Structure formats: structure tokens, C-alpha cells
Amino acid sequence: MNSKSLTRGEVMEQKEVAPSHFEMRLRLPLSFTDPLPGQFVMIQSAGHKEPLLARPLSVYGFSRLAEHSVLELLYRIAGEGTALLSRLRPGDPLTVLGPLGTGFSPPRGMKRALFIAGGVGVAPLTYLLSRVIAGVDPWQGLSNVFYLGAKTADLLPGLDRLAQGCDLRICTDDGSRGTRGLVTDLLAEEIAGYAPRETTVFACGPGPMIRSLGGLLADRSFVCQVSLEERMACGLGACLGCAIAIRNGQGAPTYQRVCKDGPVFQLQLIVDARPAGA
Ligand code: FES
Image 1 (cartoon, protein in one colour):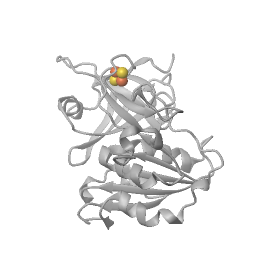
Image 2 (spheres, helix red, strand yellow):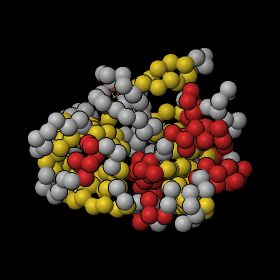
Image 3 (cartoon, protein in one colour):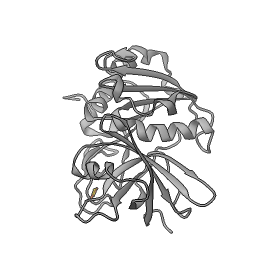
């Protein structure tokens, strides 16, 4: 089976972990390829009578048991497709295409990982963190600080997975948990404490957070890898519906597909992640 196989599975568990946020566990055959941190799957209900486009979701967790694999996903209801997904119950069949896309790259010679997550952007970074904490090759030996932002305290799903093994800094827009304000504002206050030569930044979150991060790091030499959350249709690089502008080696913008060439890109190369006029 190659990494782009269509795999049939079924829902093991589905629970609402925050308002409109769902955590889903899927039972898949052992033949399913181990996802790399940062990769995603296209998931589709296999038994639904209405046509339903497959939804791209980042891998939140993955494990192998004696007789099957368990794929974990975290998603927010953002339309009819995810609303339908949220109504699936244990035993309902699903098809999973993937793992797809590029993953995060292990940093060479780095001692520290900074994770910057907003909203359900926490999903791929939680999976990456689990690899770092477990010391899975090639992710061993990194200390880590996890900056997590949300609008309010009740929109912070998955805190139990971050409670151990990382230095967790929470920000909420209204101050209902952690520091009041944006996660990038807190990072701006603390960034001087991190040495760029020893630190790699991993980020995933909504567009405004990514642009704010782009501004913050524009004149700093941190390596920053960003997983972009973009709407996708085919997920396979065929429809070009997810194209974004990326600077090439000469600094000129070229178009790349988030689903095929990403979803992980170097932040400093993303044209839209630069401050206006830069
Ligand atoms: Fe079709 Fe990316 S979703 S090319």
C-alpha cells in the first residue's frame, strides 16, 4: 500500500471537546502508513447518501494496537461537511485518503522547539509534540515551549495532551485563561530569550496569527515552519484550488499547492505572511 491509498475504516469514538470542536478516533487497518507530523488526511463518510466532499484534516494522533491502527483527528465545524462528520457515531464507516502532503522537517543542530498554535491549529502541533516528547527518531532531544491561543477558555481543546512534557503558555483574547491577548503578543514579549541558532519555530493557526508571526519574525533569523490551514478540494494537487504564492530562490513569487507542496512551508517564503510593503 502506498502513502496515498484510500483506506476504509470506521469511527471508534466521537466526542465534542469544546463548543463545535470534535475529537474523532478512527479504527484503520494496520496497513495504514504511519503519518509524519504535519501531514493530513482527506476523510469522507462512506455510508452517507448525499454527495459529500472529502474534508482535509490534520493528523492529531496515531498509534498502532495489536490488530488495528488508531487515527485521531480534531476539527471544528466550519460547514456542512464537518457538520455531517460530527454526526457520525461509533461503527459508522469512513474512507481515509492519505497520509498526504509534506510534514514538518526535523531541525538540525537545534536544541529547542517553539510551538505556536491557534484554534484547531493545535492538532498537528500536538502530534509533533508527542513525537518530540517520546523521543521518536528524528525528533529526540528537543526542549520545547508551547504557545497556545484561543478566543476564550472554553475553546482550548486537548489541554490534557499538553499538560505534561512541555512548557505550556496559554493566551486567550478575553483573559479567561492564561495571559490576556494574542499568542503572538506573548511571544513578542519573550522572543528575545530564545537564540535563533538553537531554536526552530513550528506554527499552525488562522491567517491573522500566521501574518502576525510573519511580522514578528521578519527581521529575525529563526527557522520557522508553518502548516497552512487552507480550504482544499481534491487534496491531491490536481485542482489548484489551494495555490498560494511562495518566494523562490531569487525572491520572486511562484505558486505552490498547499495540499501537494505543503501544507508545511517556511514562513519567511510565504508572500502573504510578510508585513505589508515588505
Ligand atoms: Fe486540489 Fe490542492 S486541493 S490542488
